[in-house]
Length: 445
Image 1 (cartoon, helix red, strand yellow):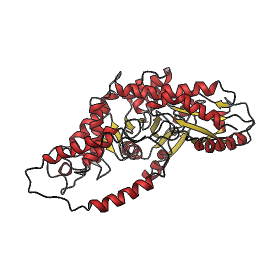
Image 2 (spheres, rainbow, N blue to C red):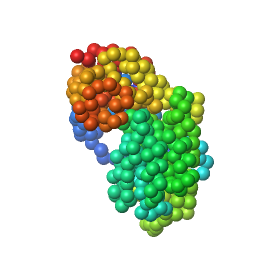
Image 3 (spheres, helix red, strand yellow):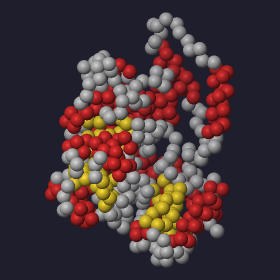
Image 4 (spheres, rainbow, N blue to C red):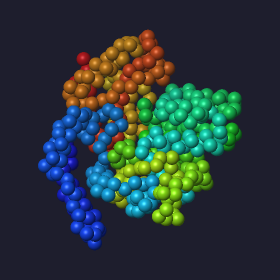
């Protein structure tokens, strides 16, 4: 069995404990038809079997894994109430839990004072950062690297902000010289620095960007949606470590607990270093903000209704796994990077594979060896299919030739090349690298 069922009895115990808190009310029971529910739920389970095995270490493809059992159970528990973390009237317990959880995330980055809240996604977290940046520096251009997430150009378009991409260096990181060349032309309001690009896991050189901010006066938003939790890792290389060491100096930061934070999808987080940006959110909602003079989370969020269950799940998870260096959670983050390094080392010494730069976080880029870019793309897609037939599930990424030319002595007959991409974000991956590599080898022609 690969799906956890051992904890189901714990959920029943927790639900009964929750229900006891309402024992003073007149008796009331749902009229739910258990037999009908069972029938359609089993039908749903049958449909859900048509999935890749995201929960298994042999799934080494996209940024997908089920939440930790404690997060799944806490979310299910909260759904018996279904709180809405917009106003305190709909989230008496879960709004304070969200504030406590967000404060712990902020403290992980060295912020004791901050403004922040959970969002339904990293996209929404990034949107709020760019929205605030646009309000503070209206009409100014947003810059991000060519390997930054595409959401930044889309969000800038939605917000009516000019957007430009900046070239990357040989390790897919924001090129500082290209950035300064653009800054010299003026009219830049915000620079997005990515700590963990979603294609290659590259970490932009934040210390150099901070130095440029001192000269050119732009805001810095750290898109750490994917890689934020690696601030707790103890095995980063020097350049990446330097970037994480100065994260407290950025103006805003996005992180996704629904990636490395063990949460179900629907849990992003936006943080601002200066709490006074809360004034930009000012609005009135007399029919929702009436139960308390305390801050309602809807007063500092562009979203209105949000799942309080996400906050309950995150708060509960961090009670079990505190965000502390040297703790169990931090050890698992380090294992993910160790797994990526282990796979890279095997592929690097294998004449049948091509690799480029070593992983900075837990994403490995590689391809079956061939004599041309077009042949590599074809072999990559064929290997992807053959590996899946052996229950090894990978991902395919298409990268610009300019990024890989320094590493591969081949005929560059196309300007983009398809490569394999493995995201080794489960701590269990470290113990499965030999099995993953063996299936890779067996899947070669």
